[in-house]
Structure formats: structure tokens, C-alpha cells
Length: 222
Picture 1 (cartoon, rainbow, N blue to C red):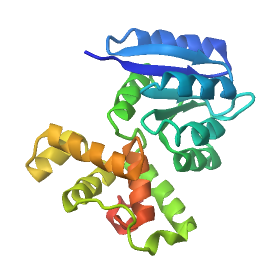
Picture 2: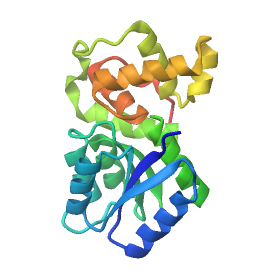
Picture 3: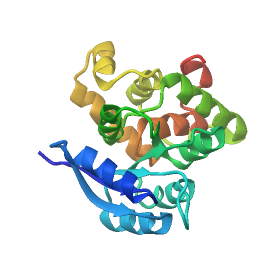
Picture 4: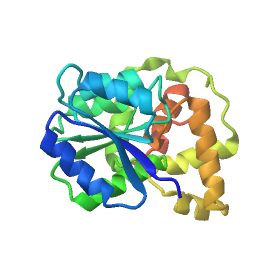
């Protein structure tokens, strides 16, 4: 079984070591690198192409926002998971817009952090659907060109899967709703991610709203 390859970037060595120790207890996770600042994080991610990169928001040389903006166009398949002490709106909005798949606070239970790594690796978001809708709504309102004709061709079934994903449904729940297998759902999501050039559900939903495939009314209510 292939392991989830993870890079950790945080300017506090104790936090990095603690996160590494936590993750390496899991049989399906392998920490392949650590970075103590943003520039080092970018170099590691570009070189190692991890499945998941865990970033702090506040780091020397480059912030978590800057790192995410830099690496996502180059490594779209790397899921960015933010692990921060800050929950300011400006950070949450900027990071999700830049392509982060999840945003956790450092006071979260260790089991939730491990589960979050697995979720973003599988293309799911660790943001609560209500939070995701607020963020996506703000982005869609600020970037107007989304009423134009979609520039990426998603199939009817792919749009259907994405609508259910936008409601916070798991792959298993989507499969049950559409009477298809979980593997088929995963295949549709992989195709959606490839067409939209993204690496997570959150990014896909945001891009689908921007490109006109989904409307805000189809997202969970706040």
C-alpha cells in the first residue's frame, strides 16, 4: 500500500517535530521532509512533490499564503493543509483562494489532524460546509467574470457529483445518492480536478462557481 507523502513547514522546531511524530505513528503516512521557513518549503514541495503539504501561516521569508500561491500552479496535485494558531478571516480567505484544501487550528485534537491529512489527500475538504460556503460566496462576489459561459467542459454527471460534494457529502454518500460505486465517484472527482486544474474539493467548488458550473444557491446555507 502506498503511503501518503507529507511535507511539514513551520518555523517552530518543536511544532514540526511534534507533528512529524504524530503523523509517523500512522502506517499510511510518511513524512518526507521538513522546512523551517517559507522559501525552504517552496523548494521542498517543488523538489519532492508531496501528496500533502502542512503549512503554518506565519513563517519567515515567505508566509503560508505566499507559499501556497507559489506552489499550487506548479504542483496542483499537492494538497495544502494549513495548521495555524490564527483564524483571522484575512488568512482563511486568502489561503482558500490561493488553493488550500483545509485550514486547522493548532489546538485541534491530534486525531483530527491525522484525519485531515487523509481527507485532503483523497480530495475532500476539512472545512465545514457552512464555512466553505461563506468563503466561496465572498470569492464569487468579488470576482465578477463568473456569469460568463463556462470555459471548461464538465459532463452532466460531473456537475451532479460536484453539486453533492458542495453540500459536504462524502464520497460514500454521493455514491449512495447517485446509485454508483465509490470508485466511480472518485473517478469523476479525479476528472473534475484534472479539468479544473485543482487538487481538492474546496478548490473545485470555488472554481466551479467562478466558471459558472455551480451557482451560490446550490451551496449549503449559512
